[in-house]
Image 1: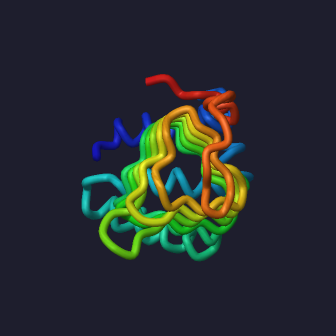
Image 2: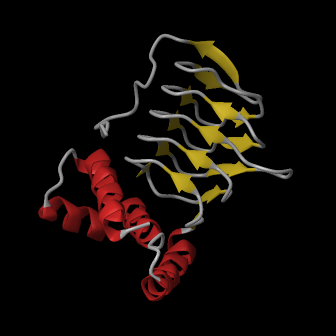
Length: 182
């Protein structure tokens, strides 16, 4: 990925946190918000220049250990990525994450066989959620706290429970604030 495109991704992530693109907002979020800080290095580590990539990859690995956030630089992540509370996270590298997605603390997205989940745009995933195997989570969906998702979740749905079941279709994308529009 080229640096110009990486900067656009970082700006989209910043907008999700602050509804601003200002340098002051960037500095403040970078200094105080572990989730945003990790996202910056995650995005930078996707640069195609080998030397630059190696430096960023080293920093990303230090942050991975320090912040207990395990998201591979190979994971496909759309614009406006938001890590709420930046607690422990484990995301399989085969996961595909859409635009304007929120991940909360203690989230695990994994697969034992093949690819992991495909998560649509404007999706909120609450704390302590496990998403297992190659499921699809439709756009504008909400996955409630403590849910275990083993089957596809349709668009505009709110799903909760172990195993997650759709409760309603009343408030699609309700928890996605400061949506970045491409």
